[in-house]
Length: 424
Ligand code: NAD
Image: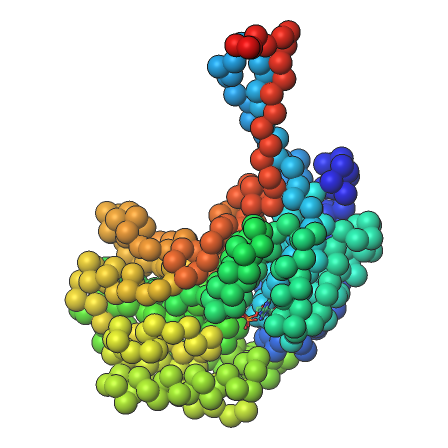
């Protein structure tokens, strides 16, 4: 696999993308059945995953090296990027198709073979993806799927000497354990972890757009997205007006079974999730926050919820709850908004809504996040960008050239023309 010509490797990825297109209905159905994706989310995920595979295909030709002017006389000096060998990819449940593609794609494009360990609750999506890659002509052994419990399988995969790198997407708690094991075993690792992402609305922002942006950033896939904009930070002068519009919008979001095309908010993945979220919301209210809407659940369905007047001391401000709960916080001014945004152990994505160019530029520089979106939602992802977080949100980047760098080892090579002279 490592020696396959780039054009052949590229054509395999393109064929896989085509097959994902012809089998998109099948993939959509599985995403609805297996992880409770709404029709909207499932379609979005399939489309996006296919676009990623196409993007990855193009990268197969871009394993670039470099040349250096050597200080040694008559020496040709350069470096090459070489695949690592076997990569273990561990993926979460929430976007099981898209994230599996992101985990395996660049690793394989760079010439590595991959063992994908999908979430224990979403093995069928991963196995179907592998089936499609096999149909596309990927040789046996290049992509391997190992379904099972992370805690049971994780250790042996990480410790095995044949595994050269672990790429992990999931919670920060598990990520830290994996990082410690990788370090002890001298393995490379990439971590894409949790977030509690700020969405800042400044007083010059267009209010209706801000409401729509906050709704999309909070309730896409029931808030089960690492980039969910679950800390909405609003400047004081427009705080009440924003809340009025936001509440109206959120009360209108339809909760229902995922297969119903009009559903916006479907079920949460695990039955214990609603209870945990409820406890977090209740605690915030006891501590002085205001419940504007939602705050109740039935089975796995948690109502889209807004909690206002949330402060940094509250758990709801600091903890990723991975559900449809927007915590809204009042900021005195722009500087206070940035201070609030940065008051978090996480640093994945951030959004800033403003028409003030200076504030947009200053905010993008000062926000402690791996990704900042001006006048857009916190949720954005595409194939060739450096996707990733800072602080407890992760280490390393996924996407395009940045991912190829993560999945290759640099080797420095020199070639001596003639003979070098030695001092003895
Ligand atoms: P999780 O951490 O519970 O599980 C993720 C994966 O790790 C699963 O495959 C699981 O089986 C495996 N795992 C669990 N314990 C393990 C261990 N001890 N050793 C090895 N593997 C182990 O996460 P989840 O509930 O599936 O997903 C939600 C989390 O993922 C959230 O925190 C979310 O923010 C994060 N996430 C991050 C990104 C990103 O790109 N930054 C994207 C999606 C989700």
